[in-house]
Amino acid sequence: MKVRVSAMLLGAALLCMTAAVAQPSYEGRRKCSSCHRSEFESWEKSGHARALETLAPKVKSEAKKKAGLNPDKDYRQDGDCVGCHTTGWGREGGYDPKDPGKYLVGVGCESCHGPGSEYRLLHRKAGQAFEKKKQTTARERLVEAGQEFQFEERCASCHLNYEGSPWKGAKKPYTPFTPRLDRKYTFDFARAVRDDKAIHEHFKLEGVFTGPPVPSFHEEFQSRAKPAAKGSEE
Ligand code: HEC
Ligand code: HEC
Ligand code: HEC
Ligand code: HEC
Image 1 (cartoon, rainbow, N blue to C red):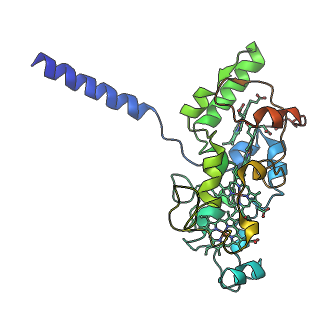
Image 2: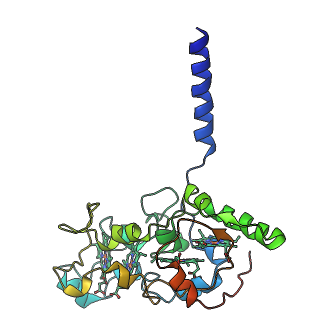
Image 3: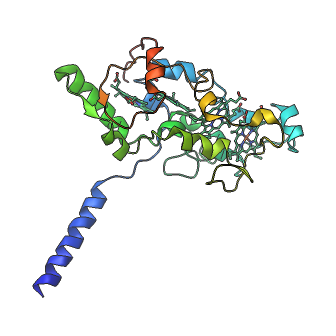
């Protein structure tokens, strides 16, 4: 009997613990750009930022015709398309065609860095601890809060999502733009991730976060990074 009771208590305690860890949700780029203005201004000029406009009628008509799509059709609410042309579609807090929040339009910050509701709070705290006491924070804690460091997987979920893809996770809806249609749609991660015009330019970090995980290209990007303009918080 005693054993049963303590097992029940343990179960209840575990339930409380899991409930205490909030599931990260999508919030939109406004939450990021208030602090990371430099990356935001660079990203804003990218094709990722304009990805939803690509689905409007008469935009990129030649490419659409080549893929057997109707260039006069409005695909901006089409469930077969918006998942890869917006941020967090179908996920908690993500893009909803019926209530299109403008900060989730296009392939935004959280499409690559992960849903930000939890880790952005850590960025703030860690930034303050560093400024006041030169105290650093382990990147592991960002991973626990839902921040993404497996960039290759994130890119693959859109760029390599088609039938016969080398990527194992492929499932419908697929991208119409595949290497079979034209070799220029072949996705080479090592090259694509270095395309600052497609991603965003890189800016110097002060070293607030330390330790693994560190992407293989991190040092390279930081070695050529520019000084960041300090964003003002709203
Ligand atoms: C309150 C300000 C603030 C907000 C909001 C914020 N960040 Fe940060 N972020 C920081 C600070 C401070 C750092 C540490 C910078 C340094 O080391 O110089 C950081 C670091 C980062 C890093 C680098 C992490 C590493 O590997 O060292 C990324 C990527 C990042 N932020 C993305 C985001 C994204 C995406 C969002 C929105 C979901 C966001 N941030 C929201 C302040 C913020
Ligand atoms: C949510 C889906 C999504 C994610 C995640 C994503 N992309 Fe994209 N990417 C797109 C779409 C859609 C376009 C086309 C944008 C347009 O022009 O409308 C694009 C365009 C690009 C282009 C330009 C293509 C060209 O012809 O020059 C590059 C390069 C690129 N992405 C690289 C990446 C890399 C690297 C990653 C991961 C770090 C990534 N993308 C993550 C959807 C995504
Ligand atoms: C699985 C993700 C995914 C889905 C679903 C998807 N796309 Fe895209 N789309 C992409 C990516 C990735 C690119 C960038 C391809 C590149 O340039 O290498 C892209 C690029 C495009 C382009 C620009 C092509 C060019 O050559 O400039 C158009 C137009 C487009 N998509 C329309 C659509 C339409 C319409 C649908 C729905 C019928 C759709 N997409 C569904 C991922 C997707
Ligand atoms: C297509 C994918 C993609 C998108 C979209 C994206 N990032 Fe990044 N971001 C990256 C990659 C890859 C790195 C390099 C990570 C590293 O060096 O560890 C990076 C690095 C960063 C860093 C670290 C400092 C630097 O400049 O390298 C910050 C801060 C950051 N991103 C913020 C943002 C914000 C804010 C947005 C939205 C306005 C955004 N990112 C959109 C892929 C993306």
